[in-house]
Amino acid sequence: MSFFSLPSPRSRSRAITRLLGAATLAIPLTACSLSVPIQEHAISYNKAVGVAEDRMFLLNVVRASQRYPMHFTRILKVTGALETSASVSLQPPFGIDAAEVFGATFGANIKSTPTFEIDILDDQEFTRGILTPINSELFQILLEQG
Image (cartoon, rainbow, N blue to C red; front, side, top):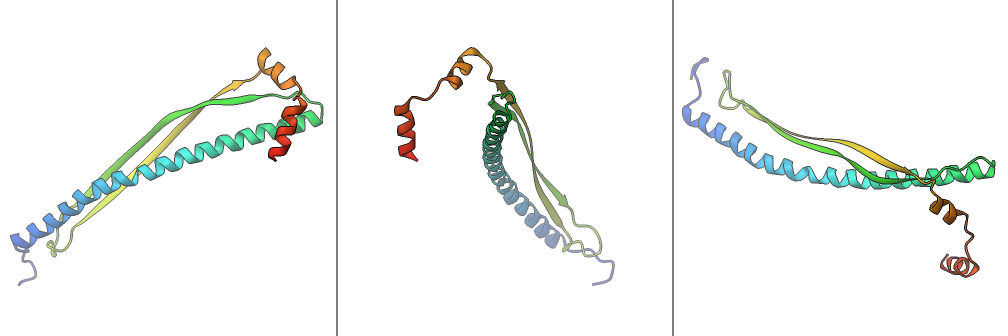
């Protein structure tokens, strides 16, 4: 075999077949791997809402202790777009050792853009409810439950 000889058509065909086989298997696997980050985003949003509500509550406790006005809000809903994309890049065999030099690159990307809708709780019904003292029976039940 001389320095400038090309690989046989059969070896090229096998290399291309292996490359296409790898790409065919990688695309469904990449799509399956996208569902895990979606679940992680949902859980992280849930945790973020909980932390935000806890901080708002604590801030109102501090405001009340300093006799500052308290502000109450609630998160109505979290919406947004979750964009997913998958890609496959094939590197065809070129060069002196063309039968052995080939490759493929597989990738996936997830982009999340959440928005929050917040409601200010300042109507008469909320104010009446928060200012109404808890009756002693309900207070006793809450104490018994810990």
